Length: 113
Length: 113
Image (cartoon, rainbow over all chains, first blue to last red):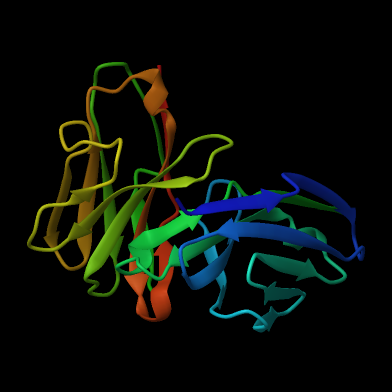
């Protein structure tokens, strides 16, 4: 059974204080690993897809990396508007499409001014 | 990307009643999905809705409880039937996009009294 574990569950940082969120996964052949951002009262917003170990993607203050067992979402010099819940999901190679996504519970990130 | 409109955004319902949630997409899409997000839990796939065929339900979800319609390539509904307080959750519509991306609607916050 595919599993996704995110840590920490919650993280409070000062503005400008860089950190990383972790996503550990167990999947029967990885087809893709996804990061989403979710603001309160809204649906998840797509951030990145990573496909193979060693791959990295960046968007503004966010950088996602992937190994064979985990992914990290690095946040550099965060701002209060980066406060959100960050979700990680995996898709197994045996999945028939995007419906094969397994989500973690998310990391609730708070950036204090 | 796809723009997804979901209605209602929130509702408070009485035990034993039913609520139908609508999902409208601004582009024609083959696959639409319904997820549930319970407090402190991962997003859980309820069912996959393809136009012209019956919805496919995940383990633990049944058609009598969560009937789904998919009359065309841009619209779907999810009904939560005979509601109980345990059905209180956020319900999310999503669509599959090229490169296995999933785009989500803004969600329906359901509270059952």
